[in-house]
Amino acid sequence: MKVTGLYCYNCEKFIYSRSRHDMVACDCYSINKELSVSIDGGQSDYVKVSTGSKSNYKFLQVEMKDITEEDLINDWRYENNNYGFIYNLNINRAILEYIGGITKKKLEHLSYYIGICRNSSVAQWNKKENKFIYMRNKMGNYFVDKINHPEDDDGYDLFIPIKKISSPYSLLPKELNNKRASELFPKKNKDN
Image (cartoon, rainbow, N blue to C red; front, top):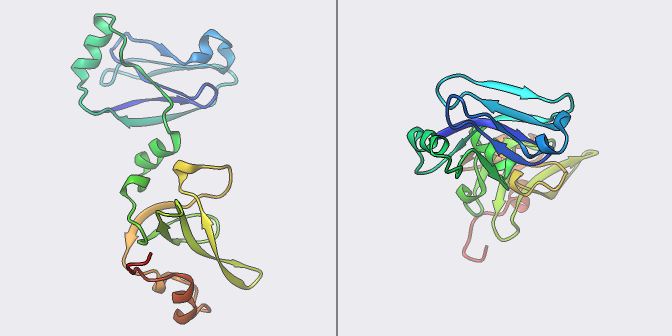
């Protein structure tokens, strides 16, 4: 099932309420309440959010495999406390799944993708490089550049893949002819 909760950027913890009266707070709550967030109301009753004046959070839905709402309620009712939070959540992967983007495990080597980044709307995934390859225009010159997937966020621009496409050539700028584009974007072959 998908659980709705809050990701706290301050302590990097995802929290969600398991049952109607299950109030869950992030780790900041015990350190500095001004930084903290908390959520109450379970998954199908209501949602109540409390935030500190310096909290930094995002609403998210995260897929919990092999878990039912009854499992969550019983976890709270019998005080097992196995659920209600996730540490070490890859926030970018969770956001990507939430907005319908493509996660790294679903990318195909040397396939082309439409996506979002500052300098291009199309890129090729290269599994060996663990990066997207794309054409960048800087001061009228085109060159090949590499860019990370959101799951490998390094603080710089990222390419957010949205949809796989068969060919990038119709999406490239008109001033870049297909001969030059094919040099920059190699076709799949057994050596790649």
